[in-house]
Image 1 (spheres, rainbow, N blue to C red):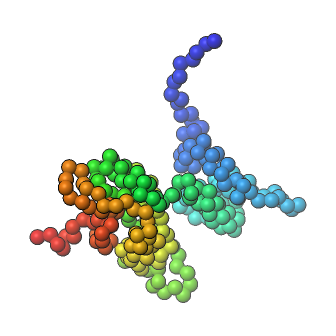
Image 2: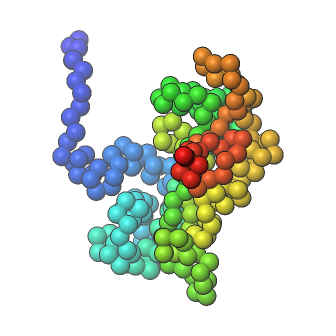
Image 3: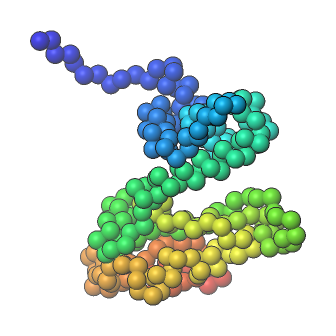
Length: 243
């Protein structure tokens, strides 16, 4: 029997082009396709064949990665604009439904929060930290007669995506949909994670002594100056408070 020496596989031209086109490698694409295929597969009719699951996923990923309009996307995908307007939201929902539990799981026990804290301590030398939170304004075309409801301080209309990430920049909690007029602190006050923390039902670990110190501090989430300073929210010292 001939034993071949294992070598690192070189990325072929096809894989490189695929990555540049879809923003993910072929294996990841087909793995995702297998997960969403049962949800996005449509039935053929006597009039015509339905658009394949692969074409639906491809169009959706191109839309998400490039941000181009349906009008522009219809030429590269050869799918009509009306069909894209139905396919892309439907496929986005399918992706979220199949990936949310394994890949977007918010810690619910002290042990799970401690695992997040270990990452911050190891990667960033920041003990007792269980997340980093911030908000992102997602620009929208405001609904008719909405007035200034979605108008934000940047002078545009938006909804707010609020996210908490772990030490590896992976989301562990997401709240999206609040109108853009609301500040990051206001979004945090009304989000479900903060409500569970305030009610003591988030499963957070008990206060713990800092390494090489006698001080006992709670586990906390780090934020910027737009957030309120609370027992479980740590933010930088405001410039207004500095001498």
